[in-house]
Amino acid sequence: MATLLSQLIDGREGSQLIVLEDSVAHSGRALLRCITTELAYRLDQVHIFNFDTSPDVFINTIDTKVKNKLQCHDGWTNPLQWNLNSTNYRHNSLDISTSEDVFMRNVKKCNRDDSKRVCVVVDSLSPVLLRKSPTYVFNGLHRLINTNDLGFEVCLVVCLVHKDVHDESALCALEHLASTILTVSSYMSIMPLNEAPLGICNIVHKRRTGKVFKKKEGYSVDRDYRLITFPEETKQSVIKMEPPDQGDPTANLTFNLTLRESEKQARSEVVLPYTLSAKRKANELNPGGRIYYEPDEADDFDDEDPDDDLDI
Image (tube, rainbow, N blue to C red):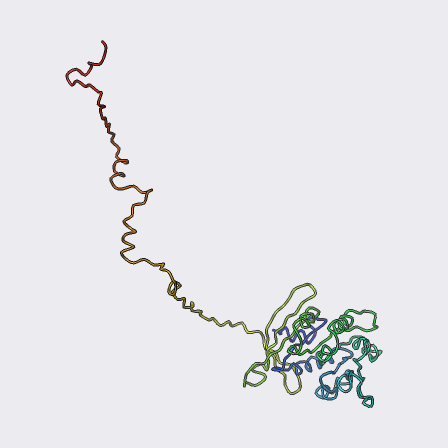
């Protein structure tokens, strides 16, 4: 079964903007070269904006069969036009010191007439984000993936960004714009590349239908910059959590919350006002009846003639 990462790279899973996030602990440039090679095989032209590395160094590892499809835009040699005598005649030189859209302007300028399906690869977006406002950069990317009147189709934009040199707000805005976020991290292993991954790729892929996929897959890159993917592991480690040791909460109080045995005994002997004593309970619950009569002092009772007080 094909992994989600391989489906995104070979085009079986559609995406408009892929953001590849790496850090100083693990570089994502090897994976970016794999993506670039695969895009060159299936599209008409690949525009590569080089800001972190020299264009010659970047395309030196690309297969010679597809090098004629690569159009490099040099933002490495003299991006701010400080050196007036430095001009790269082999590649299109970039000038990011102006307010013009550096991406759309140069793609339209250098795109071949016979190239109808093209893609854009940015290595990397971090130097531009550090020199330009995020609004400027994100508007340029948005126009690149949403403009339909260019005479050609921009099928995909892939941007490498170093997440450890930007603040959280800029990264959140970029991830909101992207349809796929690939976050790579290192994987410590001494196994061969085809048996264990070189790195781990956390994937967040948003389809146009609104469904979001989140996966964690392994990947390796061989010497020819061909991608080897490893499916998501399904094994889950079970960790038994021991309850924390909770001490006695009444240990260090200034007053006493506990009772001694004598106090407990005295408490148990107290008769509460709403309870019945054994004697009262026996009298009130006895089914028989009794009449108690106490004669007054004025009563003159004659035992021999009980009716003496009657006037008959």
